[in-house]
Length: 514
Ligand SMILES: Cc1cc2nc3c(=O)[nH]c(=O)nc-3n(C[C@H](O)[C@H](O)[C@H](O)COP(=O)(O)OP(=O)(O)OC[C@H]3O[C@@H](n4cnc5c(N)ncnc54)[C@H](O)[C@@H]3O)c2cc1C
Ligand code: SF4
Figure 1 (cartoon, protein in one colour):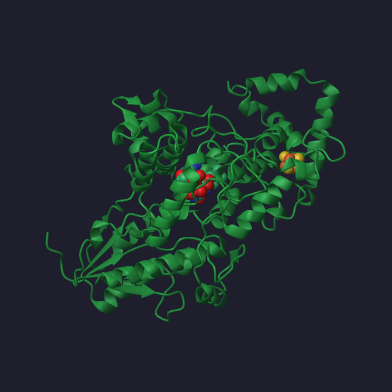
Figure 2: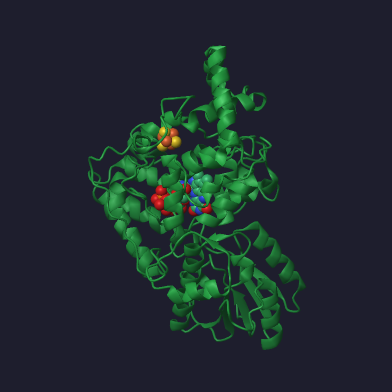
């Protein structure tokens, strides 16, 4: 169908999908607009690397489109004509440049979806929205699949996706006879195989960082402005993918839950930024992993590749579906009624708890922590002490390079804080020191004793763990996956239970000095 003349098309910072049909060929009746706006830098305090990486990737994408012959308006944060909000900028452009139509790509965040819908309805020209052509499911597929159900089971969703896309399938059966290789996966790192040095880039974003600082955008974390480590364009993202497939994938599943002081990313891909900005497509990553296994199944064995495919084809799409099924009520959920602020060390990493110091420290340094650090260290601790889910959400949404609400919120509020009361997780993800000691080398280097529940030097995770269950007995006791925990608690001597609760109380009162 012929384009109406003079169309303005908006591309958001996480819509950098070069293979979108919008960009199939240049059309001088179409102008794209990409904008750096305070609306997006200020809705939460972001990590400085995150702001710099988004802007650098947006600028690289604009350059790429212009090299392809597309017309692009790029609004920099400091441009005098920048009105710092998306609707204000679009309104101004439409009116001042005489565009006769406005189009946008469907945003992945609810707040933007609402904002753009409202704006489109009030513009003086006709408007339309198009799909981002990125995801493997539609927004509401998952909600429809689990309509009327109390729980959204990731495993059923994942199997459906494997069948639908014919990934690692042998007819109707999973390749290797199993859908899940968890028993072979998830072992602690034993030092036997070397961890590959993470491929990092040296993007010089110093001028961008100067601009961000001049504009007084409030940020958190550290940056080396001449060496932004994250991929900002397609060639870099592809290089990161190829490196991961060669060096990380062969051990991915085995060590996916391991934590160590020896490395900040172990065998993880660190592809989340490139994926969430849509520089990479989920299916090209899945295909690269499957292809590596097909080519050399002895080097990349099935449980490694299945563990990885599950993350992208399963968890990522599932979380997106959860988000759209649960918004907008999701944002207000607080099953346990938690109300405390985050401890101060979430902003500094300065705590004697070695595990938290490591996870928070590397988050401030690299804007990255891997899944188990997020879930079982920072997330679990915040849940144990009773932090308000709003505060936990804001921290995760700000600190990670890959944080966008559609994926951050289901992971944080639902999976890690159980604030949805169990739609996503079957039980709260909390642990005592036992799990952390088993899966990491943190405890050996810690000021606290992982074996002590109370008394001098007792690991805070231990007493806080029991205190959490004791406090929330009315909400959790009927959960069949937790019953055993209460039986263990009830079998403890009354004096021991008292000492544990007293210890937890002391720690909760002096939370900022742990
Ligand atoms: C509290 C909490 C908050 C999180 N916030 C975010 C977030 O804001 N953005 C984000 O992309 N991920 C988030 N995750 C999920 C996960 O931790 C990150 O996707 C992962 O650590 C990114 O690193 P990676 O690329 O090295 O991942 P890998 O371990 O190499 O995994 C490969 C890819 O699988 C996908 N993936 C893996 N696990 C998940 C998951 N649980 N949900 C969705 N996708 C997944 C990611 O796209 C990731 O890049 C969060 C997890 C928790 C527990
Ligand atoms: S002893 Fe406790 S606080 Fe220290 S590293 Fe182990 S789990 Fe963390």
